[in-house]
Length: 172
Image (cartoon, rainbow, N blue to C red; front, side, top):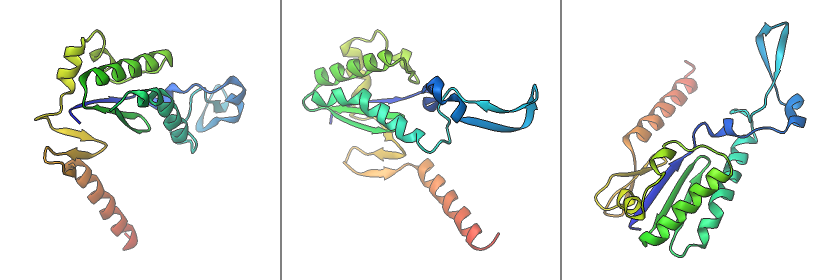
């Protein structure tokens, strides 16, 4: 692919408002009371809630599904991350603009959303041209020769996780 646009939602889980009927069923208990109350009803999807990543991924799929109708456009998603790839600059621009319109219509917030506002097609394609640029998506680096490697940051995180596992296994 010749062009790539990446997007990341800001505080994604906090953007999903829970229906008022669910407020009394999704509560948080605290060790300190406020006005004599240790329980607080949540109005937003809780970050650690088991169904929340599925909810977020489903929302992302719904926002990106229409982009699959553009010939030659590929869309990769992982919960709050979106990558749009294309060889044709016109198809890329159309897909990017539709994605941004879908995000606005859903009243969700992207990190760096303002950077995309008001750009011409020429500016979008210039910003999204792949040739000669370091490309990283979800901890993987895409090299010009077609290889895909873990980034050093990703390797460090994996090493830290392995070291923690080894310490736990050794009984530390």
